[in-house]
Image 1 (spheres, rainbow over the protein chains, first blue to last red):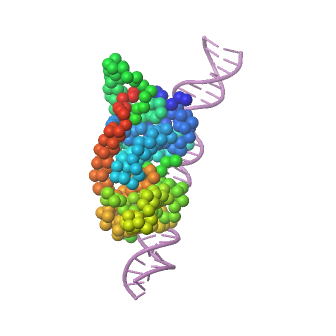
Image 2: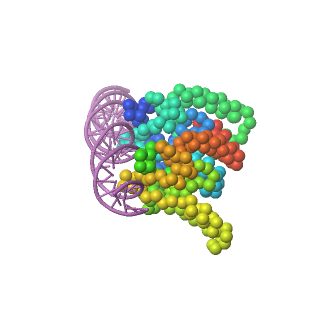
Image 3: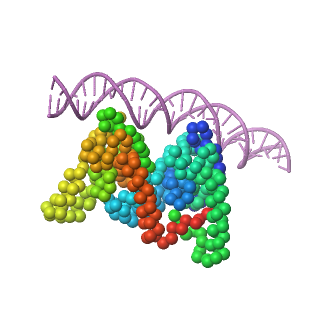
Length: 155
Length: 155
DNA sequence: TGGGTCTTTATGGGATACCATGGGAAAACA
DNA sequence: TGTTTTCCCATGGTATCCCATAAAGACCCA
């Protein structure tokens, strides 16, 4: 089952809406999740987005700690407090919230990047920089040591 | 099925009322709980709120102790004595009680923070501080236990 | 192969519904 | 009777729904 692949850049309109790339919409439709699950990334200026697969992974992380404990509360605040569930309108668009704009620096364009089980939302220029860096790292990993690179569990 | 997610800040009016964010109301409606279950958090200046899911979690916690034992009574007092059941009015608002105001320091604004199975009620400024701390702890927790969440997965 | 048509997609914009908030009046309370 | 709570309605702003349009691509048929 193919996931989110490739990347696309779309404009957002005067109302702050942007079209989700059609190929991504198709994946989401198959997933069956109502709307879109978004969470700000802790280690880069992007937002992770997806459906049930992503939500399940987030939930799994917090289930490692007992509910009502200080650790669980802190983790849940960091995870779910930094999440959103924007609706997808009839034309396949979502509105980019202020929280996302602030975290990503998005102003008038959005880059969608497929990462198989989820996709990321970037400000186009920042994505270009990140991508260059990621490719350098990938190259170093592939040529340096050799613990099987892809298909593992990213997070 | 997504629970309470994201965070919102609303003003309370001259009568001490505040609107519960519409997305949270939708979750409560699905949960079926009449009104709102609130309990002051034991480890931070916030109030836990929710419906049947939260109540079930609290009950489970107290059932771990044999009834009629001194421990059970003490726990029950601590749990249920610190609880409230404010009603939600026709416009989706609740009045913030003095107990909550005192425990949280809420004056004229309220921040609602989703933690999936429940949400928390904070004074906005205190939440900002707690959130920064929570993110640090979350990073430590997630990197500490799981193998290697290195994330270097371009594609 | 080439031309033409039809569908899909991204984007713009108007109209409507929803939501947070304020305030008045009835009802309950002390 | 004075005070507080509860219910109801008003309003401004925003988000959502719906339709229009243009461009690009897919498809078909000669």
